Amino acid sequence: MSFLSLLLLALVQGLTEFLPVSSSAHLKLFHLANGTEEGALVLDVAVHIGTMTAVCLYFWRDMLLMLRGLGEILRGRFRTEGAQLFLLLTLATMPAIAVGLTLKLSGLVERLDQLWLMGSTMIIFGIVLWWADRIGAQTQREFTLRAAIIMGLWQAVALIPGVSRSGATITAARLLGYERVAGARLAMLMSIPTILASGSLLAVDVVKAGDWSLASDAGLAALMAFGAALLALSVMMRLLARVSFTPYVIYRIVLGVVLLIIAAR
Image 1 (cartoon, rainbow, N blue to C red):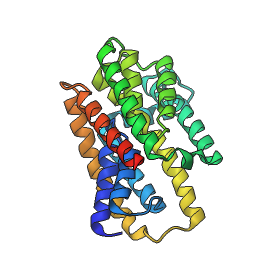
Image 2: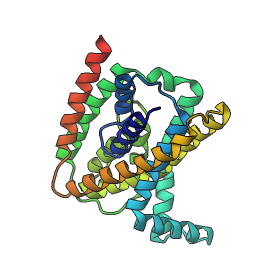
Image 3: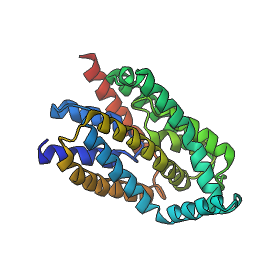
């Protein structure tokens, strides 16, 4: 893969992983426009590592809190702030892991990889995000067991291509009453174990396939994806303090229409 293609791949993955616009739809468009093959597993693992590192760095205080919480859990202390956050985030990840494994083992992952489906879900869940942002109260403060379960189920729904993992979890957070920044923070923290699980599955496939032909590009891809993801996170979190999700919704609808037009050809 050329340097330009590698750069574009890292930028597409890094910029769209955490925005509520569906990274899978953008990657599909990238491969169609670039004429490249999907499924370069080594690069997929690399960009996952890059984006996960970005969110860990951006929310480093929460990461330290969770690490302390893990230590407290190991010492039998389950009611501290860090322990509660660690346990609830772990619980919130379980539905996506269970559904993801089911889809992968059943072969449904490939069947769902359809442009018409991506276009439809981009539009439908974009409208749902707009609706949730419009009616959502701003009364919820604590991350509760109920919130973890509901947001976890929405995250599992996001395994359908085009839904957007961050879009689905932010939608759930707004419906639960979290204000925009708080809801986005929880959605981003939920992404860490999810991306780790997804990257681990890809890594297993890499080992099985012996696909190391692009290993020399992997480090560069991870670094560029890290930079793009950190930039996207920083901009989004700052904008959410004063801007609604409407611009993302408009973008989703436009892109969804484009995908449906391409699929109809």
